[in-house]
Length: 349
Image (cartoon, rainbow, N blue to C red; front, top):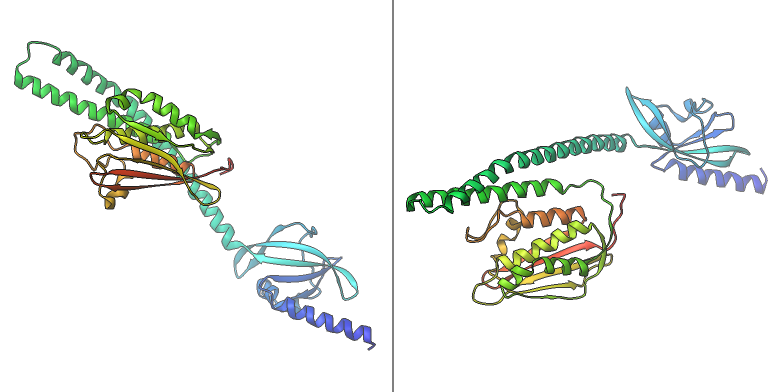
């Protein structure tokens, strides 16, 4: 054996050592499709020794530099194997090096996940339909209760006891109307695909403040808004988010002092924006912050209108935008809501 042959033999031994220790199965196949080499992982995959595999026909079409999936029958089970072929010079002839990886578990998990997603989407769709139908069917009788109770209350012939009873009916009907409306609003916000577009949050908050002008005057509130960013979002949902936050701050203001509300941007990690909405209202105990976002949960007395839907809607909107909202409060001093949102969204999500 000359020097060149010895060098070539050493190279082949080194190559064999590398291939033998790979976790992926490796085959070398000649241009006629016959197996020239199989590493240990390949022997395990095909349940045959290297000597048994050598010379056998591989049996699958080989497309160089393109990932393929093939089916391998092993121990009574059909495996899905990912294969990538590359040209190689092997034992003085052109051949194909096949890298094979068993992806059966991943494929099964993907298929199961797809099935679960399909069931979940169908369930969500049905729930939305039920909520929509329920709210539509319930609103009409509630409207009638409110209308006729108003008519009775406007009359002059009611005894004091009768008036009290009708006022209770009217008050209960108003709460029921708020409850049904809240369920309807919750059902409209889903996690399906959305067309995110650039939204200027300054313009959104300006619109909210304009729409709440009467409540702001009534509360003698002062709202300070710093320069806010433009982000990829859903315009209507951003309006609803800030409308709920500002109206919530106005609702839970303290009687003895004017309401003061701040909306400003804070520092955030790369790719995200942080918006903070804080007030000097009645606040809440900080340990109750998680309860705030649960539907129909109320931390304060029935002195305040509403059914505890607003912050639940806010959380759903934030989730649709792949963000996060947290609440912090001090009873008697105010509340702060921090919103973390991606600056850019992918419409493929």
